[in-house]
Length: 284
Image: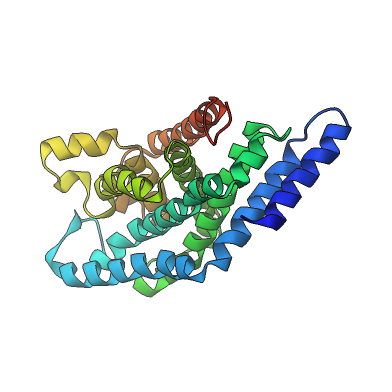
């Protein structure tokens, strides 16, 4: 159990309790900081999150090469270029998964129980954990984004800022979804099993590997119902902001942005509802 983290949260709770009401933003900041420090102290996770998607991108992209035409004549680059946005989202996905494993670990170590029995609200707990995972996933994605010019994607300052905003929304929704799954489990093995069953297929059928236009009819419908498809479309449109003809087969920009926002907010509110139910972490 992280003694420093426990003392920090308990200290906040004690001070606020003396004032007559629990605080909100100070516990959020404490939990956010704990998530960030905990992740970067585990260097093997950092290396795995960054290198696994990069190796996947290079191996798959180079292996398929020119034998695959991602988007017909509208796509000027090869498959490495097409696969690049999918790699960014995969890094965000991996980071979110690793971060939300801490919910199960905190329950096992007793830290989660100490937070739940304190005056800290569960909304503070959810927001702190989700923002911690979101900021980590955003940072990991932004570390890879500068590789875009190496494969022919030129980025302006405006595009970099928009990419940061898009990755934040993607990371926020995926981290909140990871929180929902982790909150209801007591085993990291079960968590990985559900992740492989749910989030990895969501990524595979988001347009990261192949476009909707090249999919069979039923796969195409599954992709259209997949919220990650629209998040991927937002990212692709930003990357090719100066050449909009490349996104001719993508969902409309307004639809993609709308679905991205609604999905992020929905996942967060569902996380609040799930965390607000009694009976988890030994607290009735």
